Length: 320
Image (cartoon, helix red, strand yellow):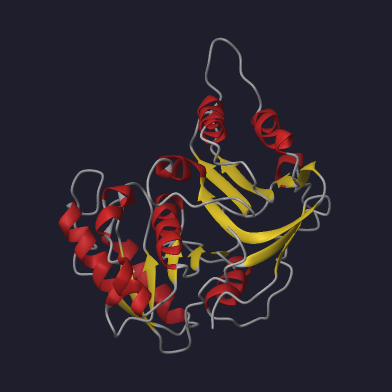
């Protein structure tokens, strides 16, 4: 990825106008949009729900034309300061080749979401160099830990520095799978690039696939069988996508299935099989992904991964 500096969008300040969009899966209920608007107001922002956000077309939040219209308007309208996806689901990859990247680049603004929204975040950053934000969707509740890291990223309320781990209640024993564990110790620096593993794999062979050379790659996923995670990592390796990564910060893989009459490998074994041979610092268990207490990770911002210490530090601000 070289040393090219990412473009930082303006920070979200009190009174910022936020476009709430559903560019992928449909909202389960009207209350999703209501909760999203209320959350915006609680953060001091002014919400605007996209015109087609409540539509439904099978497993999509309306037809492609409707969702694309909402998304491009949110990315380019002069009176919109930020774009917050209400949910993920599926559907972003159907729209990518018609996204108005030039209009977005003309007036950058934070774009926030995760899961299926990974494809949009990576495509926007790849095409324009603008920092995007892998963080909670707007319909979800926001615990104090998540809110602090969210506002730190998109509102610039704290300077760059180490990202903290979620607090553990003093009377709770933390199982090993919920700790940050080094696969291969060491320190790596580079721009943060990544997100949902399934969506990263979906971008392979397209113009939107990011160049991961020199990057600190972060990964997460939900609801996948271990063998499918294995297959996705094998695809990335075979395509050469993992060649030259500076380090890997693995987040949470939640609701992992382990079907198969022929026996199964553990998720940790699969991660080690593919990531340890890269010969770079790797650790897993970071608070990234489909969990309540999660980081908001700015895509494109330089960071330092210390795998042995289980720490990730932002080296520069994500917003201007």
